[in-house]
Length: 152
Image 1 (cartoon, rainbow, N blue to C red):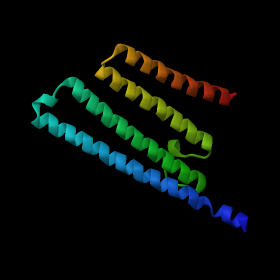
Image 2 (image 1 turned 90 degrees about the horizontal axis):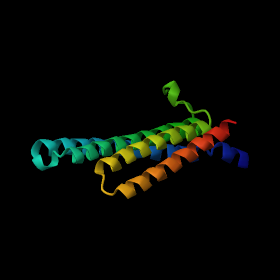
Image 3 (image 1 turned 45 degrees about the vertical axis):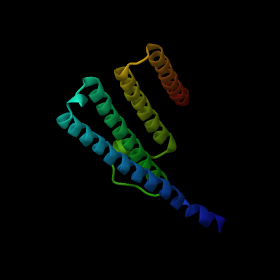
């Protein structure tokens, strides 16, 4: 009986896969909304045409869309690992949890790079920016170290 329950337990992974997909969809729509709002502001509000403000807005849009893609990748990954196969491109096929973690790590590095770029564009406090860069460097170094050790 317990074996049958555990085998049917794939439904447990179905719920996070669906919720991540819904989150990805919401973020994608929100990113489009922010982009359209920014374009509207540029056209009708001259005070918003400052390149630094626009850079920050567009970087935020990229960040939102990237996070949407991360949620989608995880949604697909959980579904493929625990529920069933999907018709997705080869680069998106997930056959084990390590592949899913590796995809997450690479996207985390990209999100951190975008976040740092946004911080540099806003440039308020040089020391704060430097400490932020050190923190990002530490996170990236730990991820690289983890995967180097894991390969060996």
